[in-house]
Length: 179
Length: 343
Ligand code: SF4
Ligand code: SF4
Image (cartoon, rainbow over all chains, first blue to last red; front, top):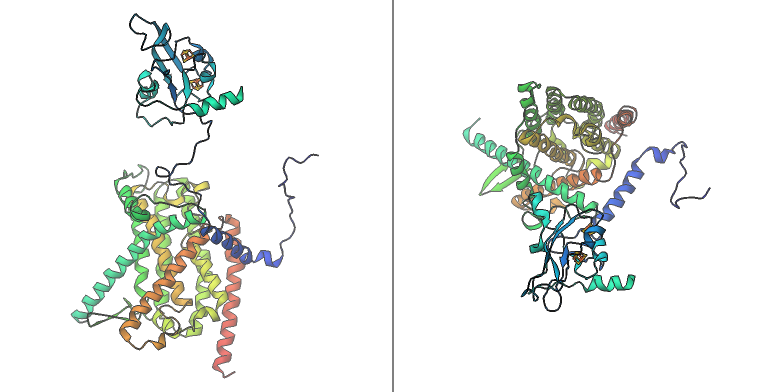
């Protein structure tokens, strides 16, 4: 039979030798092992001060991107909502009025766009479905909230601020490599 | 008894009690740090520098927790349990010689609270009373797990006290005295009992672990099977008392081990120090260094060994330790007789 692991050990019920039955040598050996660990480098990361680097493909809280002129890219096509396996995305579409061209890139836009962070499984399928490159997952972690309603992120939290653009180049290049 | 002596003793009692409590408090911190370091972690480091205020935070948390007395419990016994555990734990320190003499502000302080000539019996007596705290608490909780824990604790303590007593008898035969002061004084310099009684020391140490309910003998608590054992029903500061009593016991056990086998306050080359004032302080420090070392060993063992199974525990106690202790006693007796008859 093919072995599933290389670390399997044969169980043996042989009588213990006197040395083994005294326990003490084994105990001292064990204490030696733990003492060695006492002086070893610690694995702990002092979290808030020190943060471990994220993987470049980390999938955290979403961002709704704007284009170079600061217009929202999303056209409320609903493909992300359809693609979402967790049904976390809802939106209400609206038609762009005259004079709103500097706000929305397409003729149709999302007046309401909500992602429920408690439902979302951060799979990234919305990002893949989007034809307008409007939605991306960032390396931001969902912060703690005290009630469930606060986890439903609206456009106020999702759309990137004009003065603080979110860099998604890491995920874009990763997607290009995948394609 | 004249007044000066009375005041001196009261001061000494309060100081030693304070030191005991302080050390027990910081043992909880040390335990967590040692555990963390042995497991490649850092341990608590948020409260104060290096987490040094952690014990205070823990105590504060304990105080503010809700105090529950189960409806089905024996109310008075339930309250008495932790009290007895704490009381017996604190009482044992009285007979231990914490040093010879300390010279403070031109005043000579005798460092033993009560020089009882049967000091060692007094300690053994109080240690074995400690089981009542656990038993009463466990029984009064009216809970199966607590009862199991209490029964385990009492049978374990009775079994291991036998071997412990027998190993002490060997020491007593050697030194010819039951007074801890006398025993400590005889081991001056490096003339420590452990060189003559290595087997006795191993037995005594094992039994001390069992008496303190420390791992690998922490069957009365056993989180996995008994979800905490005898103190399942306890909350708030009553639980705090139980946990705290364990640390006090650990401190006292370390002190007793140091006194009986490792020369107590004696340290090598102490005869070379001529100033009695300096010597007094150095002896005090030497004793505490030994105690801290043994507290560390207690913790070190806890985070190295897994818990015994109950039948293994009884096997070890009755079938290994007691016969070995008797053997040790017989050999010691033979050697003592031979020496007295001039061989
Ligand atoms: S990441 Fe996945 S689960 Fe979350 S909103 Fe996008 S498609 Fe839905
Ligand atoms: S985010 Fe993209 S996929 Fe979703 S509605 Fe907007 S444009 Fe369509």
